Image (cartoon, rainbow, N blue to C red; front, side):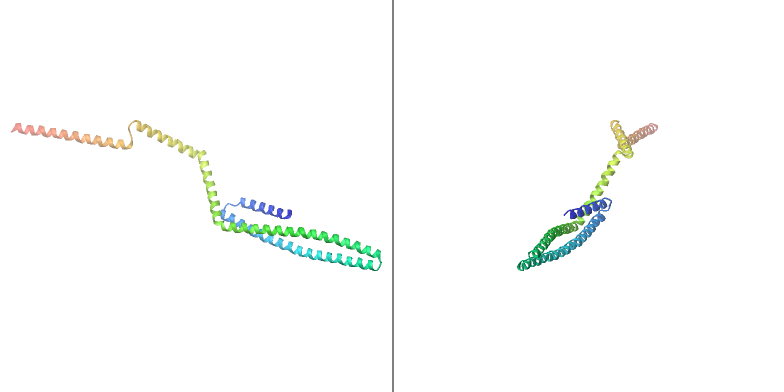
Length: 226
């Protein structure tokens, strides 16, 4: 179990370190999927080895069991023939065979537990890989949006403290001040244009009145001469 946990920790550390250096979300997700595929492949190979080791140990357990039975038969045969000393030696060999059998059975139990745990982790990895595949496009979009948002926030933050932003704010304040002064003075580009129109109209009216006065005088002089 410790071995499996250590493998998971190393894989997680490597994936995290490499993904942190990636800028393109598509490449990052593709890389993670590739790493998961490689991890699954390695885990399957390791699990296959563990199962093979289990089969080897199972054969060794059977051999140990056969040795125990063989020394049991030999000790019984020695007792039947009245050879107690030989029976004692056979029983000693039987005890050693039993201890070896118990050690092998313990090793087999542990190996089976490791193999079972690895199969469970493989299933979890496969499920996670399939989930990531299904969400790949969404994950890329989310990562891309987060990256763009982060960049925009940084630009806005930098702009707030930059000299360009400060100069722009000062210019805007000056324009607002000029507009305020012009409004207080009753002057604006539109009012200036209107003022010219009224001045021209008044000038034209004065000329017309002056022309009319001259015509009246001329007409009056013409009537007196007659």
